[in-house]
Amino acid sequence: MSSALLVIDVQNDFCPGGALAVADGDSIVPIINAMMPEFDSIIYTQDWHPADHSSFAANHDGATPFSVTEMPYGPQVLWPTHCAQGTVGAAFHDELDLKGDLIIRKGFRTDIDSYSAFFENDHETATGLTGYLRTRGIGSVTLAGLALDFCVAYSAVDAAREGFRVTVMSEACRAIDLDGSLTKAMDDMAAAGVTIL
Ligand SMILES: [Zn+2]
Image (cartoon, rainbow, N blue to C red):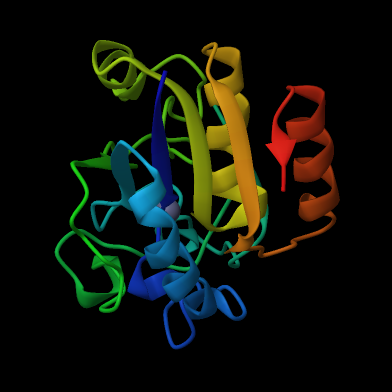
């Protein structure tokens, strides 16, 4: 059974100095680079929003970043403007090794956010990653990246639901921890059968 490393959103805007910086986010880059030789496939996700994206607080009158709004698909945190398509903030961290085989861009539809590498936040709109992994004969996936309690956790839970054996390498992740989101994410991953190392 082949294995894949999923490198989640290691982009400038999620690193110190970025628009939605995760504390210490850049410290995981050398750890992730060192993990790469162990895997048959290396896949990256890249948060990739149009300027008018509905997850940006700036696109909702009077909304403040990190508040929560109700979308047709459920509650949605409103974020500072981040990872706008083609910007330096949306680029991968300079030191991330990019010799892997696939980049999945997500969050490119204006009306819906996408934390998971597998499904957008309606949990129905697929990114196609499941099909890629299956046709490559990949049965186990290991996740690393940013942020542990949002995009990494959503991706890990979806990977488990899609029938993959899933491991999250916690030392190669960093969290935002917004209103208890880290505890909830760890509980959700454990309940889904994700192994957290
Ligand atoms: Zn985003």
